[in-house]
Length: 176
Image 1 (cartoon, rainbow, N blue to C red):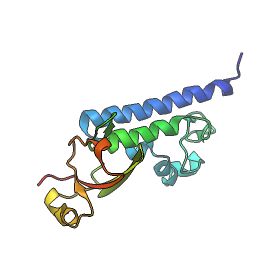
Image 2 (image 1 turned 180 degrees about the horizontal axis):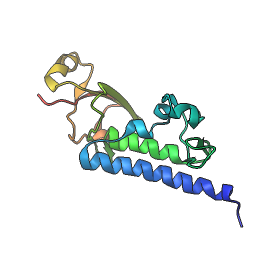
Image 3 (image 1 turned 90 degrees about the vertical axis):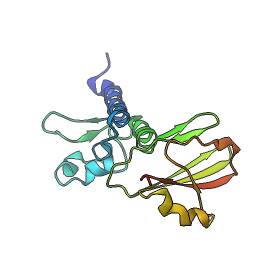
Image 4 (image 1 turned 60 degrees about the vertical axis):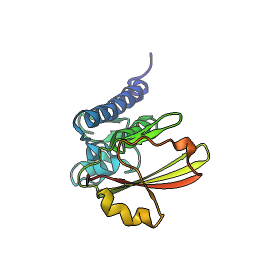
């Protein structure tokens, strides 16, 4: 029979995956996601939880202990697939990237206090750079006119397989 320690990572990883999935579902339902709550960097830098967490701010815990004397301490940080789920939540739910074989869309759900996000997608010999800005399309027009970027509106399908090897897009987060 395996020791309790040997069974913990699967449970912790499952819980981390469930937390990320819940965040994705919440973003799709009401347009919000608790990025700060899920992020290990935010948890580690918190004035109260950070010292208890005791993990590196760049890894995701598979579990967080709930029993004394280790309440709040992260565990199984290098053992779990939890980081992959957090990455997926960030890309698919927060940045809203919906990618299929030939098209993509960005259905954004950024926290209101984020002024800008940049996303680079490398796929099939292409490097696509997206700059998501809290601005209107008309405010971004000088950038577009200068040829530095193309306009892509949230939810607009983009046939990425037909693009040049390098392309940059600005995505306005505010309506005109």
